[in-house]
Image (tube, rainbow, N blue to C red):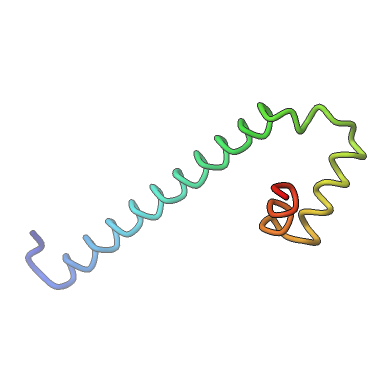
Length: 72
């Protein structure tokens, strides 16, 4: 336990940096796993123009709207 207020502030700052690093690593891991799922899905087997078209639809309509339309 910290002896002074300044030591406690330093300790909290260090813990905050560690937590932020863990969050960054988790985000990287999530992104990596999502990319693996995209590769497994077969989406990348289409030609470049098809993929650009799909990505354009996602960009213009949003992920939720595209998912809703695909599910219909």
